[in-house]
Length: 110
Image (cartoon, rainbow, N blue to C red; front, top):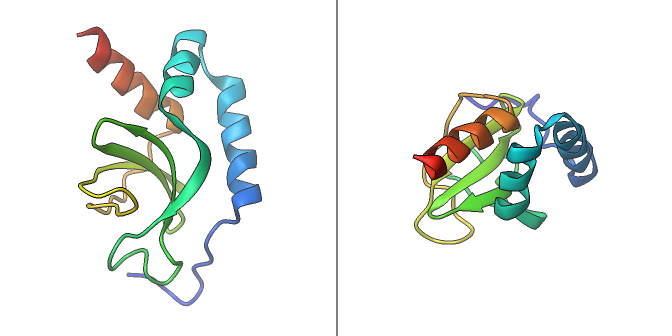
């Protein structure tokens, strides 16, 4: 449940988190990241969980899957999407961004 204490992350703080994650990425994973990341994070809608914060920041897209920062759980999540700008499914799982990319890399290699 969303609480009154939840404050959406600023774009500047999100970019700082992404910088930190990029510095720790293995070269192969960094290549995957470069191929799926958006040029700039985009605020996408997710009803009802993202309503209070005007949505969640999407940082990457591969196929019909987006990677977004979940402000509520303070981690990166992924979801399918049908329409650009709308996250279909809310997730509370918060693997590191690199782990999401590793999973994607393994799918590509399979």
